[in-house]
Length: 540
Image (cartoon, rainbow, N blue to C red; front, side):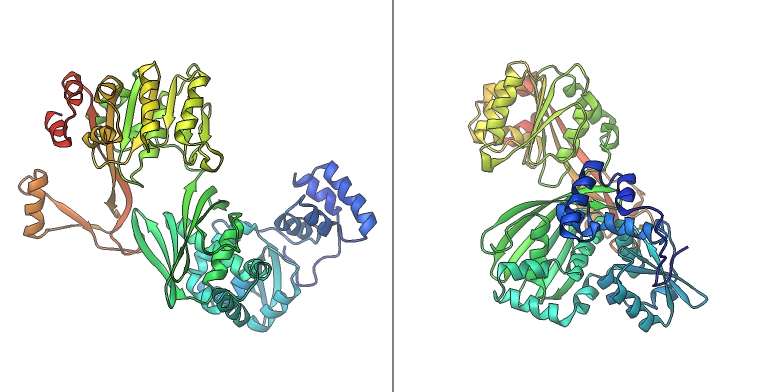
């Protein structure tokens, strides 16, 4: 049972004991904090926070247990629209709360900090109810707010306190010091806003978030299934504050606004840890920022689930069984090349085989495989890393991308000396990989001797199964399809009409399409003659 605003005065266990029981603190750290408390005569919880031993959320949870405030599980929780209507969105976002139900003049409210007196008073004034407090996990509460209050990013921007709005304008005008900028970016309302932007992107299956400033507005876009979708156009008032908040999360220099920067955020999502790569670039209207979302908790896709037809899958698996040579995967950025390489490594992994990768960045961590992230700032490039990998007696090597002649040359020579090498190239088709390597300066006879297979791929959007229905395409479309593929007479065509499941796009999810070029004897002879892409395609 939750408690009213006064809370319970019964404390069954000491704070330190509770924190140790929940494995938030060890006994040694507790003794250090207790010794510090004797000197400073301050609350133990505050000392533990200052020493960095616990987080605010862990402290709130332990204090709630001490006070007899019940913890509530919000997963699967249903909240009626009449309850949502009782508490304005601005209060929900300001205090990190969620109304749950009302009974006998009492309103049950989930909180991550049940000891804020101001929130109790504000809720009583707004709802006219006594408040029954429950403690909620911060991540669960964030997701529940998003679920019940909908896409609140624009509304949160509009409802931020006037003082914060004016401060945002001052930031854009360059009137704040770095210290003041840092202070504003840690305001709870701004923290909630940025978290909500990220949560919305995760829930919407976005791969990227783009925050782009213009003269009078800031556009927030999510890349979903390869397409940029503008979600939240807003005024420019808080652009600089939002950018500063993201920079703080990514350990970037918040005072530097005129030089591109890169950073990294570890974010806890609904299904687990999300790694976020952050990049800023200065524009004429301020800094634009891009966040690439990488779901570490996503399970690796098996080769059989990538969508290859039986013939392509069989040919690709034969390439993987080679003891030496190069296997290349090609396609544009975002076409799933890395996912395919991980699936390949996962397929052929064996404890008796030494496997090493060099990647930019390491997107998924694979058990039993040594993975090296490139670090150009410290001189670790694909080429230098690959040289060192060869000294570690590898059987199989994966190079995240061949970007230059040096990397290509080392990879090919590794393949010629008994290693199986996987890598990617940015080309439009499989045959184009050959001419791309020739353009880099690689000798054709070396390629002919080392390359075993080239897989080209694309990701295409799928029709939403919820709103899929048959339709008759116009004649122009049919004529264009007949030029590219065979359309049987009486063939059925489908399209998505748009629904809530697919956000009215008619499309949801993507599937791979593949083209495999096996390097046979005739193709090897042709490569040695410096062929064009068309010549290779015709021969294949």
